[in-house]
Image 1 (tube, rainbow, N blue to C red):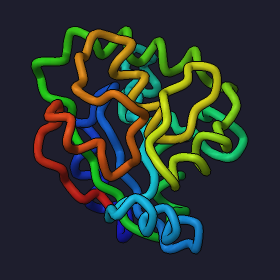
Image 2 (cartoon, rainbow, N blue to C red):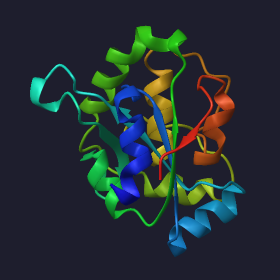
Image 3 (cartoon, rainbow, N blue to C red):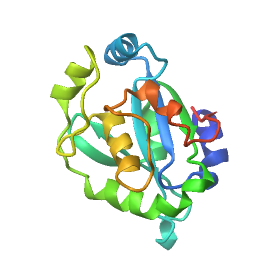
Length: 174
């Protein structure tokens, strides 16, 4: 198991709508952490497709990356990642919105990456935009558009996400 041992231990508990926060050892990751004054530089969502029998033990991640919103098998993404990843389980109080949240997030696959807002976000907070997304903007919009009231006016940076108060304690899975 090696690198994925902790992830595999927690994988059965991961549900659609849970948050993943990533810390990469890349120069871009370092720059994002520098301007956001946080310890993470990327955010993504967990997707559980347990309704499909042969995928019952698989978990996926939906993320805003360079090509736009993409869907990846989480174990493959973790296996290639040079850095750390924390899993933030969405509190059970929000189970009612998981299906809508997942449907909304999947429908955004292929939406372009929001480079303009990402660069502006380095200088100051930007408004969330539903036409293009950077990583934490995408996760924020998924929560906000699907029944979770968030006391956050602008698009958050990845390090802002834990402050929403909607997650259980994080678990480092990589």
